Structures are given as structure tokens and as C-alpha cells.
Length: 376
View 1 (spheres, rainbow, N blue to C red):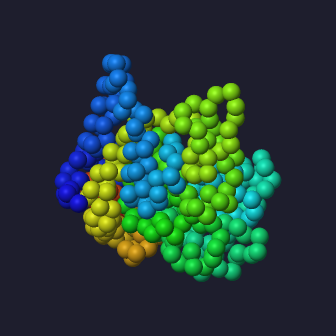
View 2 (view 1 turned 135 degrees about the vertical axis):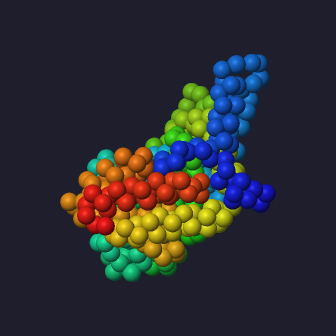
View 3 (view 1 turned 60 degrees about the vertical axis):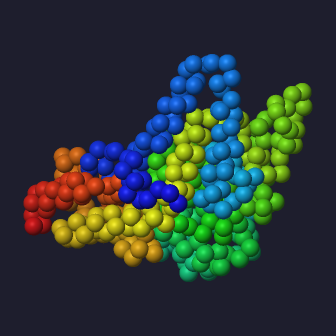
């Protein structure tokens, strides 16, 4: 590690008041410079200048490998988490246990696969107030369950799932993880999962169009690469005049050549993360989350997301009374505080670059809310 957390945080320059990293993370200096460099190459078209574009697939898979522990041949670049999950769920035969409250990427992929192929059977889990835990999974699995699908961090509750506990409970069934709400800020035990899909537009801060699908050897053995394009064979180069079978590794789960500029953005962000260390990012983010919790508590706004550090990542969920929600949303808007308001809650998501000015803007907004609602 050569980059410390202060230097890392200083490379980002989002406007004060931005607290919506669970929706999208503004890019920093490194990713911006990488994109601009490749756009300059693409604009010039100088003889031989396009060679670096064709090196980005190997580079981005190496960067993902460094942070997840999966081998590079187990990793395929994807333009987003949803496409990686589509590849996965369309490739399964049997029952898949998942919560109906999961982010729609998981639920839609499962149901669409059932509707199209008839070989996947969604098994809807009952949860503990939206939280998937080893305890509430244990008694809901049966002999037809071949896989369990979960989010690393739930997008609504902010709950950080116990991957190791779930692995112990589900035995040799496939464990599928939608990791986007934790990837880059949670030092997770990805090795216990069979499938990990994530994107880079949130906590990794590499912009849209960046993501990956990582598959264990067991997953590669059990899944069928239904959606497999011309880039997905063992053949080196363009396969012409015949349709070749899918590769035995993660290449099978590609459709076409990925965007090399997106790959470069993603790789640059991941290389930087590996340099500073996800554990250091997680520790600094914990401080920022605690600061948000302190402000919410100052104005007695109910917090329904986990408070204990082992159970949380970067999301704080506020749940005012229904009649106060509009007042709170308006106060945040009027003070220039970016959050997500959905389903009766306010989701607040800081990052390592969240500064004191942003926390003070949040405090001012909550003071206005408390004054307007008569809560203070």
C-alpha cells in the first residue's frame, strides 16, 4: 500500500451536500484522467494508437481479481450488475431462494428466466423486516433449492449480510451475491460465494457502464451459458464460418466486446482502491456513517438501518412519520442535500470524501425540518 486514506479522499471533489453514493458515486481525479486519456487516443486515430484499448479486458479482470480473490479466468467484464445477474439466473436449473424485497435486478432476472425457459423456480423467502439472515434462511430451504441469492448490502435497509453464516446454512448450494451496494467499501469474504456480480457506478466511483461477473469453478460447472455471444468461445480472435461452443471459463458469459474506455475507468478505480486498501476505506466510511447517525439522533429522527458497525456499510435509513416525510424531503432539497427518498424513507449515503461542510448542511436541513414540523 502506497496511498493513504487522506490522499485517496482528496482525489474526489463532489459538491458539498452530496450524500447519495448508494445511488451514484461522482468520479474522482484518477478515473477522470483515465477516461480523458483514452478519449484523446480514440479521437486521434493515430497509427498504432488503438493497441491499449485491446489490453483493457485483461487489465480490468486482473483488477477485479485483486479485490475479490477470484482468478482472472473466473471473471468476465459486464456493463452493469443486472446483466451479470441475468447471465447467472438464466443459467440455473432448479429452485432459487431469494427475498421478494431484493433490488429488482435479482427478482426480475429470476422471474424472467422462469418465464422464458421454465427451468428456474423462484422460492420467495420471508425475511426479518427485510433483512436476510442465516437464521431466517435455514428453515425455508428444501431439497429442490439449488441456489440462494442475496445482496451483500440491502439497498433499502442498509443491512450488511452475513455471507459466511449464510454459506454455513445453505451447504453446497450455489451462493449468488449482488454485491453492488458493498463492493469497494466492504472487505467481504467473497471466497465463500459462487457468483459475485457488481457494478462500479456507486461506491467504486468509476461511472456507469462498469461491472463484472465472477464465477467459482463450481458455478462454472453447474451453470449453463444461455446468453453466450461470439466472444464467448475458446477461439482466439474472431470465430468465422462456424458457431463454436462456449468456453469453459467465465468468457462464456459474454455477448460481445466490452467498452474498453469503461474497462479502463473501472480498472483505474479498482487499482486505486487496492492501493489504499478496502479496509482503510471501510474504516473511514464508518466514521462518516457515525457522523450522519449523530446528526439524525440530535434531531430525534428515527433510524431504521443497522447501527452496529459489523451490520452496516455506507447506508443510513431515516424513517420519519408519514406526515413528516414530505417536510423532511423538502428541507433536504432546500439545503442542497442529495439523498434518495423512496418508500416512506430517506436513504443517506456518505463516502470517504464526505466533508464537514456536507455534515453541517445535513444538520441545517434537519434543523429546518425540526422547526417546520414542531419537533424541536
